Structures are given as structure tokens and as C-alpha cells.
Amino acid sequence: MIDIKRKKDMRLAKQKELATKTVVKTKTPKELKEEKEKRIAAWCAVKAQPKKSFPPPPLPVQKRPAATLNEIIVHANILAEPRSVTVKFIRPSIDPTYIDPTRVKPAAKTYVASERVLELAKNPAHRLLKERPIVPGAVKKSALTCAVSPRFDELAVPKKKAAEKDSDLKENPFQISPNALKAKTTARIKELAKPIER
View 1 (tube, rainbow, N blue to C red):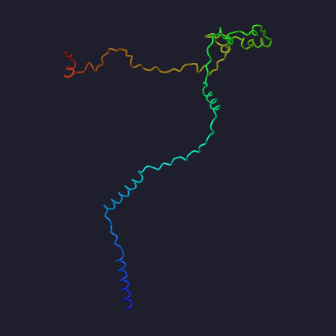
View 2 (cartoon, rainbow, N blue to C red):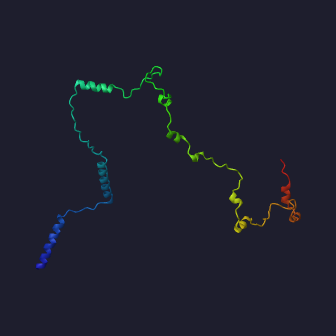
View 3 (spheres, rainbow, N blue to C red):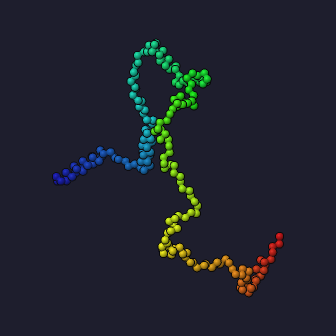
């Protein structure tokens, strides 16, 4: 009896629990697709917004003391001067500071060369030697008195090669082949042999 009563109590408790539970409704594929599209649209809307711009921190402003009138005048005079000044052209006949670039110095006119300078001015001995003249076709003396070895004699003899038959040259170029003499012309060859009338 106790077991039956306990089972009944358990069954009633289970029924109450099922009644209190909210029924989860399964969604159709179409509804799931719509939800997914809504989530994507919301994500795109958030990401499409312009990024927040962060301005740089303000630079510290250094306040200079006010310049006096004399300082302003001095600075204005410095700025008023041109960066590069071109010297005005003056004719050599008028210019007292003109120096002729081709002039000879007075010291050079009275200069006397020392023995060492004269020694250095001379050409060295190897430069005074003349080169031997090249005689075309001349044979060296050592070549005239050279004794030829038997191997050189052997190599000096040209190799004999068999003369190749020249197929282009014929003894009788106008000779007619015997097969051509025995040939019989066909009707087609006779037709082709006739000249074309134009």
C-alpha cells in the first residue's frame, strides 16, 4: 500500500512539474533563416558606422615674451637683405683689382733652373732606346738553325683522303636515259603537253 501511494505521489508531482514548465515551440527553417538575416543586418548596421576619430593631444603652447621695437627692426633688416649678391661686372680696363690670367710673373722671367731640376727634366735611359723595326716576312735566326724532330716531319705530311665522287658532274650531261626512250605517252600526258591557248 505504501509503495502504491508513493508512486501516486510521484506521478502527481511529475504532472505538476510538466504543467508548470513552459512549452518550447520548435521553429520552422523559414523562421530560423529570418532570424539569421536579422542578426546579420544588425551586425552590418553596427559595423557600417564611421569609426570614432581620436584627435591628437593638444601641444603645449610656449608663450614668448613680446619683442621690443629695436629687436623687431634688427630682425626686419636681416630679412630684408638678399640671400645672394651678384657682383656688378666692371671692365678690366677700369677695374684696378683686375689680374690678367695669362700674365707671366716677374719671378718666372728671372728664374734659373737648378742642377737637380735639369737632371729631372732629362728623359730616363730606357725611354731613349728605340724599338726594333718590324720587318714583315723576316725569319728568326733560331728558326733557321732549328733541328726538326722526326715527329714534326711526320706531322708536316698532309693526310691523304680518298677523292669523293662528285654526283653533280656527269660525263655526258645530255644523255637520255634508256627508260625515257622506251616510255609510252598516255592520253593525259599528250593533253598536258599541248600549249594553253590564251
